[in-house]
Amino acid sequence: MQTYQGSCHCGAIQFEFTAPTISSSLRCNCSFCKRRGAVMSDFMLAPEELKITIQNDALATYAFGSEVAKHHFCKHCGIYPFHQTLRKPGHYRVNLGCIDSLDALSLPAPVFNGAAL
Ligand SMILES: [Zn+2]
Image (tube, rainbow, N blue to C red; front, side, top):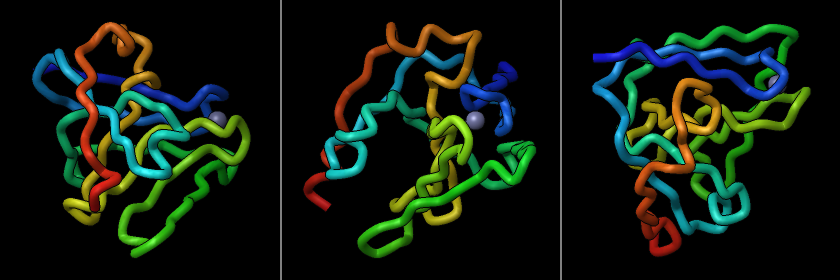
């Protein structure tokens, strides 16, 4: 297990979790994700597994459609650090690009067919 630390671009939102070494990722082709273009964790974290620190009232949330998925972003720098998933409400996927110790764009990144949901 390894501890990973991530943040938005300005640092107002920080997060930390422990997981097996990350060697793969996930993209999604839904109407929202294809615009965002982020490389996400292919695993989900329970709320108690993701430690989130927020400064300057930075956390904003976008939801659409069923509004089950909560897409969080930083009000100040606009970056998406993590979201609560549609498939497992309340559980999180994180933006692997927010983790400085990880070369996120070099990981295999299959596309989940979220457009079909
Ligand atoms: Zn920020």
